[in-house]
Length: 197
Image (cartoon, rainbow, N blue to C red; front, side):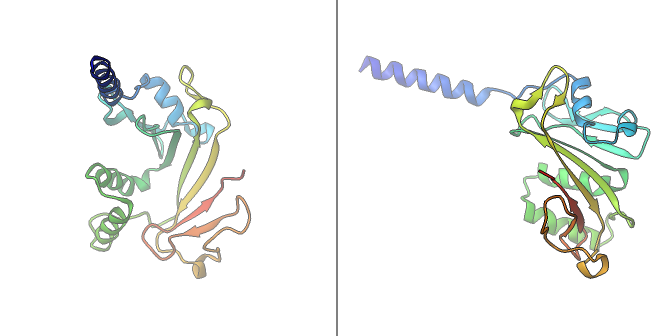
């Protein structure tokens, strides 16, 4: 009986410790280096960067002076994934983050954002707007340098309300890396390019 109680106590201590483990928050300069990985080389230095503070909250790590916004890797999620996008997309991205924080799922977010765009509460860009994404495995990530080895690029060009007819693009890829139109006819219509491998 004593052994059972001791084993139960050990299991409780182990699971409680595991639950209390907080994600590692890397130094701001490393987060910035990683967040800007997908950006064109000439735009990295001037991009605005969001990252995480010691409490794990998303904050502005660096104010930018060009037209790109980069978002660092979420320490609460498995794998590494960072993105940089045109400032014209910030209302869309910001609203998405707010709705995620409220606990909305993907379907709910799309419905709410679509209704808000239709009501004129905020707007999507009226010209095509770029987003660069770079992602990979935790095992290939160097926390000391902010570099990610063997990652993959994905390029997204938001073209609100575009359709297969207006663009001539297919709505699904038939070759690796070819451009195709996702969510055609909606406020979040976008051209997907990649990954290539």
